[in-house]
Length: 587
Image (cartoon, rainbow, N blue to C red; front, side, top):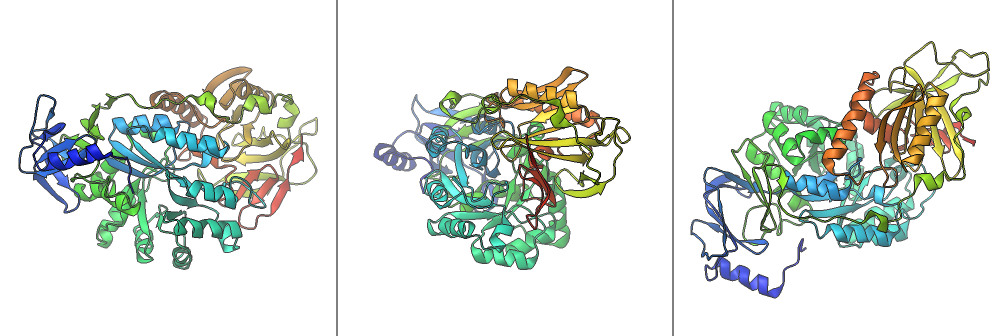
């Protein structure tokens, strides 16, 4: 498939520049080029015509006054990096992520579409088509399940919605498939979506943490072609054995890459062309270090040969997605996505060439990109959804019912289990948390159904007065704290910001993080979002949060594909059985 179109005149000129009959538009002179196809470095010339590479070899190209000559003596040239598994909605958005990626050498993104799916399909398509104008090539996934509780398929996760997404030219795969319990129950819509993805010639990515060999066999039999959930070297090998691609991950929630690389080395498992690298939608603080350049750096530092690391971040994902005739290597006919490095072991580029244009230098963009008009899109408005409701402090108190209280215990940043605890009661008949600073009230509000679910949570922080967040995996809002007044004030402030995260103590705001795009992400540049997220993370750490990523913890409280219990608009749910353990109530 064509990643970027080329007209007849440009196509013909490409041939003439390759034959040294016409002058090149760009000549990269003096670089040591990595041929990812043969895993060798060679000092050769690169001639570029328009957006594409016309020639790679020992002869100098024909030039003219209009030829841009890039002096690359002593530099190394590698292909633009490909992020095969991006979640561009972790407070940042697909446009700011693309800008950030380009400046650091990632020139292709394969991105999740989940948080766009609250929009009408025409608007989702418009966003994808606008992103096609960005120098970074960005493709998307078609989600088959919403990562939130549902009893039946509903738009856009019904057959019609799945078809629309899979048939769009900017959608390159189905997945990632997280509702494996639904597959095992032979949910007709899920099975239809998997088969439909394969029928239209697109990949189907899975999500199989801790999966047995039997589960991986079943997934591969259905048509799952890749999994990024390997935690050990043996996990990698098991995925390769069943014919899947194995994507080695280093994210803010699963920083596994050094362990995987060291395990593969110790086991003597050879580097495979069916391995890829990903940062898996890390939350903003991790991107302070970079994007795929940082992921590659970690792989090299852990012992992976640089040529293998670069191939896993360029050629291998290009082959997997069937776009290697366009991207993934420095070769004739490919788009001229070329990074100049100071040395083989330094993956952060000194200069970035994208589509034949010098686009970044020393981490700064040199070209205009694409700026969306966010008011063109009908993201849910937090303030509009709550306009008929008045925030009440009694929402954030738990009346004693004479039975043990449900306590959701955080085993880590993602995994939760539920216990029943007998907690003291205050003089007004409400459950008291005063004796244990590790506990907080966890409330989930669904503004559409006007339902409230309450539980006690252990492990998010100590003596947390009031935190409200619209950043969840569902359309619900979370409020966490030990002071009903502070919790109400935090939620009120989030409504005024039209979405985001707010923290209150003693009647005052101690943190405000606006996320006005559907309450999930920000229109601000990536650097500003990183700063904002670091302030949040730092404050929560001061409150005693000990798990890997407090942002992902907020997101995943409502994500019903993760063990063992989740909080939903219907109540507290046991994930495996789908049973409602504690029902919600109407506001």
